[in-house]
Image (cartoon, rainbow, N blue to C red; front, side):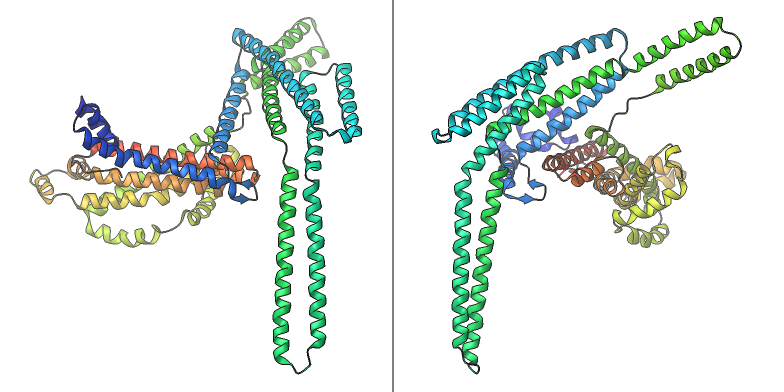
Length: 567
């Protein structure tokens, strides 16, 4: 059993875990622990150290979208992406539900809406408690302000009670008032800092005027022909200008810090805002579900139109003359409408995981195109020196071309063949990205295939001549099996190159996929989308790693020489 597990790890390119297996079987524990520490523990510690450094340094790096997101914020962004995906597919399911399943889903959704009122009531109670804490902090000398705030709070509660507002409205209105009160507290607490900045500014202005007056007085004392004095005077003026600039920069920094503190809210306010935002999104989602399970449900729409159609048919049965003609037209229109509704699909926006699937389809399309081109050419290059000599200039010329250069060229060519994208069976942007992937990823497979074929033992080819094997038999029984390990090495490199090229191609061509997702998040330019870009970056790396592992497994399955295949 031990050797079977080690064989599986070897095929999967996971030999790094072999010491763990051997340790479990008690084979040379000290040596295995040393191997585990060297190849498993140390890399894990390095990864942990990188995450800790990211967590510490991220908030210090400022961008126009805000600070660099921390690992915790990236995890929260992923949870938001996953929730959006789950909600969109739930709405898709609700649109297609019918019969007892639709009734059960509708009952569950309405119950969830009722339970959500408890959350709104809890937020209202938290607002009441926060208001009480704010009132308690008002100093005794500010009794007029305290009375004003208490009056506004009482008036708000009276208005909400009189209007019989919903739990959500009550929570939001109470939060708005305590938010305004907390903003006043922050402004009051920052008054001493604001006064200190104003005093510092006045001090700097007085010092600058004093220095300028002294320099003017010095200038009046310097003779016209005193060149040394004038040179020294220029240096004095330069020092004055530098000091004035430093003072202006200092004031600018102080004002920026004050502005940043004014923009911040109390921690309690931020916590309440997050609760209201998440609860509001949940309420909106549940209300959308109720609509989709009732008025927006496809089966319900069909049933409503069919009930109207039955009425028209009954009227048509007793109608005559021009009325019968009009009713016949209406019946035909209702029939067409029923067919249209029955074939309709829910207009669901593509989610992050949908775009991952689109990217995978695109990269494998390009990869298979590249494989279909590269392997035959590589085989002929390996078998014929003349053919290799003729292909070498083309390979050397086109191999270094960047995907950024290939993409617009391919886009123009594809656009010339697909003039009506809305009627095409494949989108031009998708096809352009796939062809660009193929053009950039076929070279490793081609080169490795040619190398593998040219390196076949000459004795094997001599045996083929002795047996008088035909070209097809030589290819299938000797050439391809012998070159297969190197062919898969090229395929592994090609797939990795294709995955890297694809993201750039999708980003530039606006083709649906991970690249377009990153570009859309970049154009949004908010702190939330900045974190989502980090999520996309992580998924690009993880998917690339998984694709590489898959190719390693395939490569090891056809490798007969026991050569290492994984780094």
